Length: 269
Ligand code: NAD
Image (cartoon, rainbow, N blue to C red; front, side):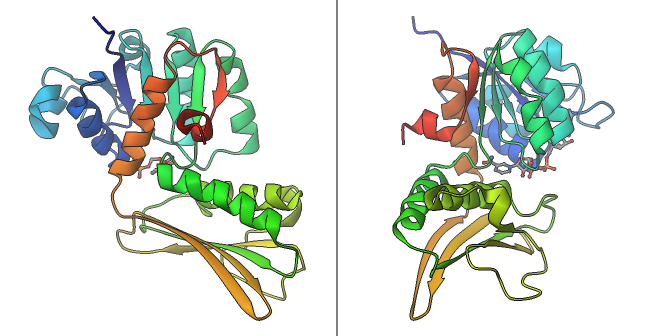
């Protein structure tokens, strides 16, 4: 009989947590074995099956991640940077694949994942959807083909609860554009949230964040030169695309050598 990996979801009551509970409990390729919320949350002790679907009946929300991880082969984690750092150490201890969808991590926080990645597989991506990961590849190609007559601007929109700006996806797209140009994003990024306050310098990559209503996630990469413009666009209308990508990553990571991976590895792009 094929082994069906057990999955734990952190941030159970969050927007992505709820979508993940549904996606994993509906899957024939994985079993939901635990759900974690932060200490003191009013979901602790509740049975997620009662609200999220019969297949998850008997799975109770816990604030003890290690106890939950010990029963699992993978942890899917869309929470917050500090929480994710703690989960990385515990997932490594339990030898679980750790799929990280959390965005807004600093360079130092990303570097702090390294000790955990020596013992367990970590798949981390600012966007888990197939479409955005294709867009990243296209952005790299287009940026490599065009010279600096083309200004590059990344424009993103999200719902009004989103904490970080620019989005993790916008930064992935900016990194790809910089890589295509053969430069480092840190040297050319203009992240001013209020847009342009003066003229852009030639070669800068600009970021703009729109926050409003229930926008799931919209990203444009604009290449603008005198006389012509190219726009690459991805519109997410359903969070299920991120949850499906995360589950795919959790299954892909089974039996892989410990280390840090991203969705380009998972999707074989
Ligand atoms: P949310 O605020 O709705 O949910 C976050 C949940 O995490 C909350 O329920 C919160 O209580 C829980 N949490 C926080 N700290 C915790 C802890 N220590 N232990 C357990 N649970 C804890 O946010 P969301 O919209 O679901 O997004 C979550 C994260 O995922 C954000 O960083 C967001 O940008 C990111 N995201 C990534 C992708 C992707 O494809 N990579 C897609 C969508 C969202």
